[in-house]
Length: 188
Image (tube, rainbow, N blue to C red; front, side, top):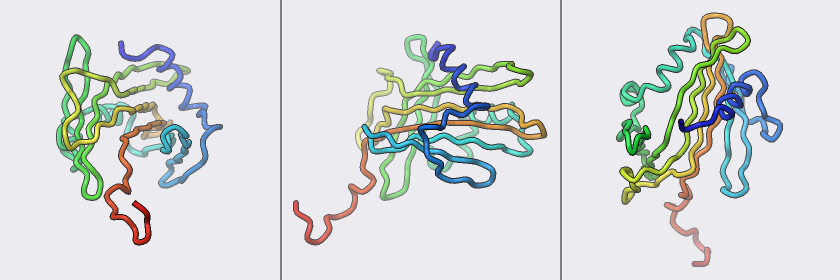
């Protein structure tokens, strides 16, 4: 097992009682609220989203979210996406090619899905985080994202859709401004 029972239980609680006191409201669009929290140590934000998806049930949402082959069809940035096994552990390798000025990135991570029945609701919880695997070392010219966390919690919204909550953070150690030339008058 890659994740503890407590990590899954905490994710379940987020759906009904989001822990957002340390987050600032960022934006709301199409019924989805996005919150963010600044991480001092990285200078980046961690995000949480909450909303509904009408007309798409939670089982379908979970299946689409976890289907690597399907993601290759709709995500034009995917260069390589595969599940692999090393030393009895399942991992996922995901390489993303972004357009200029961003660099290509890759992720090596573990992911686990569990289903729960709590308070009359069927809930799908999907957790993921970076994990080292010897068979997937960093590649030259590709930024390795080695601080990556995600969680997705999905249940029915009481109608014909889904109620979703997610959180994510990733640090890729690249300044998105590094490609800019020095400004006139700037000291070297």
